[in-house]
Image (tube, rainbow, N blue to C red; front, side, top):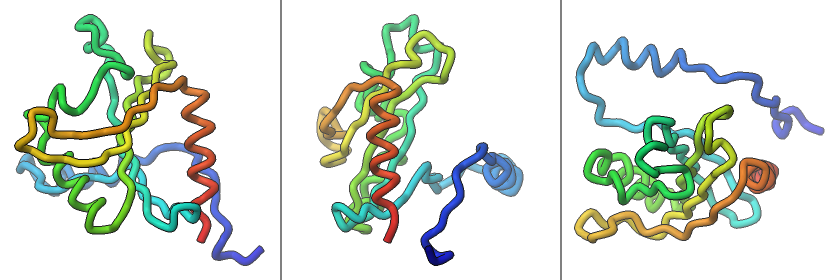
Length: 153
């Protein structure tokens, strides 16, 4: 196997770049978004962007879980993020997936919602149009590992 096609498994997260950007902005608002994941999909011959949306424990008491949350519920608070993600996906001819999850060890840790974005229209009553699939953490892991394997060029 040639060295170009070899990749290492992820060991742990590294938030140092985010911390560095926060320091450099010195409290100024950002006009950028950080990508959670961008990869090639050899099966569909396009890039795939995956954006993770944490459903925090504080939302559970309001009846909001990973399976019930959707960007349309809070679009007014984070519109530019979804507009930018959609524009970049279109420019790259990429598929865009939004993935709701909650942290391991929380009440709804086993709920994952995969949303394939079909359109983002800020003027619409439901601005983010998605095709949704509810799954468990293990089902998501299977889907994600299959996607990951298609990342080889």
